[in-house]
Length: 478
Image (cartoon, rainbow, N blue to C red):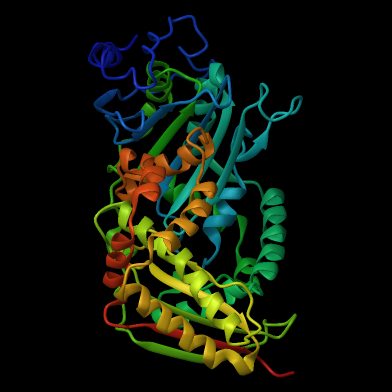
């Protein structure tokens, strides 16, 4: 056992029995956790230097000496298995006109000189048996690598992840397969009403000289090359090692998880710690003043020839996630109110959709947005209804019965407490987003206890006297 882990072990004897049971001791040197498969000697691993137990969530977080952040949560929801998510800060933040779309294609076609892939599963068994599965993806401010493995093969799985970070390559045939898939998906998504609205919001609000805010087109994807994708991976992993956070969630004791991470990812080059301030100059974008309006047409609105009508306001940055959750409850109230109003006025409206997201990839850029599809001749009436009902929600709290009516539906859709995939994703991103594990764990408690006045206060802070972005997109005439 490493000297670092021995010290950590004694510090955790009391604090880490977070699931109601004492932690198992570190595995002996001969166990499956103790040593990676035979290969060239690895650098001496960086050990755990800081560790915090988060009692409300059952999460333990740690820093390795090389700057890698680690989160662990014990779960037996998938017996004998673990999920691992690695978040590398960067991704689309650095894209330009010359390589727009490269983050997604590079991550999905990611392999190594030894043939380990970021989109592979061993043959010979269904998911949940003995195989190790890996999958890469690109995001607005990160490259993400997901790993699923048997708990007793965690060191082997993390060794594969380390190989992907040390010797990234893009195989041309895999690149072409993923490009073809991305082109099909781009064609499908661009005609979705929410995507049409998002593209128009980006056009109105975001700086025109910032290519990374523009939606990727088929032409963008077609001009990318495997060499560009491989260079992109190397930039994040070898040339300028990106800040890295890893979450290990599943049926494995804390000591074994930390030991496995230390002996594999602890041998990676030193890097800056991941934090909410990481790449903040790129992640924060000046918000243009509201109100603003947009009236335009789109050839993508086919089908039943309805217009998109939307209204939005900046959600801003609030103290923790509870405010965002209050806004989300208000969204459900708004949907019901606008739908009832339009139906009562004889409008042939599709169901109203309203949403908000916590500030993440671009802090402070989150909006509260509501959208409805109506016949073009009813667009003005729908726009008025959206604006007035948003203002009403900011001006007076919903009735208790009205709020309780939407609360039940929200609670039914929350991720389960034992959803290991959910926990792996949110905990890997948490230090980047500035989210405390215990705040993430209080999601059900918050939605159960947020009252009418909290909803109104959250909406009033976003409403800002009625400074709205309102958008009407009509179907283009043939």
